[in-house]
Length: 199
Image (tube, rainbow, N blue to C red; front, side, top):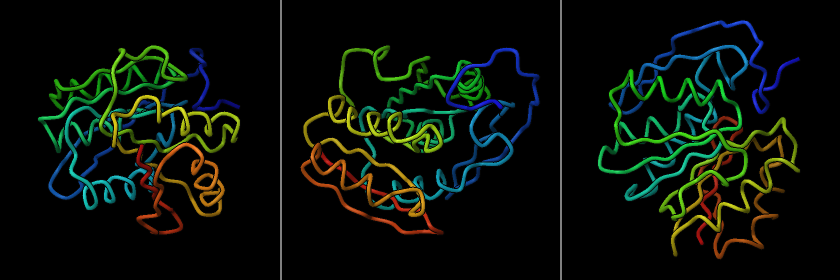
């Protein structure tokens, strides 16, 4: 069985085209077998994007952790063309798709890296970090992604993430309370919880 949070370059391809249309911003996204939510746009990502649009002023530099084929980062780059968006994913196929999707949507304010834990990033901080964490990789994999984000935020910077209530959203928020000065549940939608954590 293949997991989207690992690499398997021998997987057969299953190229698909998905359309993302949300509040006047439209993207065409190419997906493939072996990446997260390759058959449809993930509902949790949509819930997170809606919460970001509604709750914060998106500006400066944005980081999308575990970007998959680019749903979060590319949407924000398209909606807010004045920002700079950096993305990374451990999955090489996902990174390749994100790069291709940026080109297809004429987005020049983006950069994407193959990385698992922030180490390949340029040495600077971000105003906003967004994460739809790889729940099925387990807490030992995704908890450090959430907590380590603090070190890559500007002073007063914001981490926003989404987790299903049934997948341990409240436990994750409690864990992060030791790392962030303020963590707030800002949205409940279709079983998903969206949290806003501030450095």
